[in-house]
Image 1 (cartoon, one colour):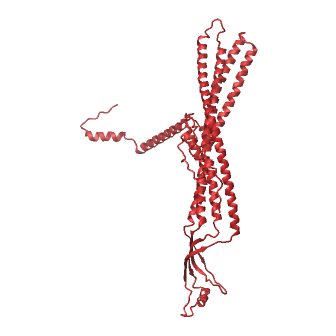
Image 2 (cartoon, rainbow, N blue to C red):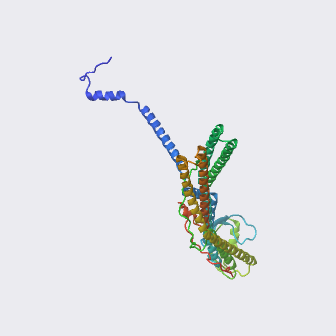
Image 3 (cartoon, rainbow, N blue to C red):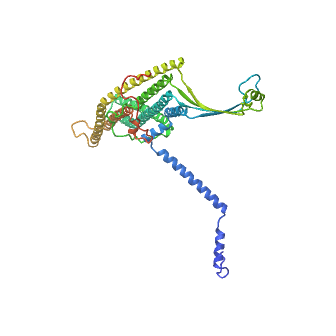
Length: 493
């Protein structure tokens, strides 16, 4: 039963406010609803983000970037660069004064020329040394060698990643084609079974169809194993779980350059060898230039003696000026000066200089041998690039031919072979034709894979793989100060 409400009983403004207050929900309830809606929105956002990440495909450049950031070989090479940079700073820092403080408080018995020290400070630095300049040059060459070694390791890791990327893409397409063949072979077995029951095929025909299906099943299992292994291998290289790795299959289409490199060396490894040898040469030069060359050092000393000890009091009575009858020993003593050392006989350092000189000569010979091997390898690669290009053309024509043959076979299966007097195409012939077409397609995949592998190896040997891939984690082009010719080993006096 509805109770009527008259308009003159309550003003309109009051009635409206009363109605709103009657239907207004509790504030705690509103906060609880808002909190749940926020949690639902966050969960939906996280789920969408994970789904987007799971569906994202990894490019070759991104894979190489991840490998360069996570690979232990690259991280170790970067540590070597830091160590070499610290060694260069250490060679420079000998010119910066070093200071130390200490104390030697105690009680002396008998005659001691120096009283106990309450507080002492010493400072000093190298001012001049002929050998130190060579040591700085050696440290700088060592830093450059470590940087070149880092670039060479980055190229090696990029090659491993690129080859794993190629293998995964090849195995993915190959596994798909083999599974298609296996499906066609199973259909062929069913057709042969029906034809044998109808008396059109013999037991041999059915056995051959089963054998083909069994071989393709084995090939499919092998292709799946290769696919999973290559996916896990690429995941280990880039630091991601193998199950989450999905690639886009894109690869740079531009062929590698066959021009002779403009630099003095084929790659950073040869430059690192020469720079490392140069570092040893500079080290040997510094070791051999120590005799009859002065070494100047800055010396600063401050002593605050322990005046409350008996030793200080006794020495204070001893060190007295006879003319003025004043003590010469004070509580504070400061010394400042330059110390000059002129070595003229040091058999140990002489033998050490001979040792480092022999090591430098050996390192330079190794660098020259690396240069010869690199030049020989570059020559072989430049001569074989024409063959690689021809293989690329053959692979392209094979792919076109396979596609054309597939189109022709499909047309024959749809409209017949065009010869009413000849044997007609059957469903059994159709499945065999499909299996044969997949064989040709797999052959094209293998040829293309071998070509891509050769291109990656060529780029690795020429030191241009990272720039060819177009990775975002590029290294700076290197400039070497090492000898550009295979000249004689420089002699050091």
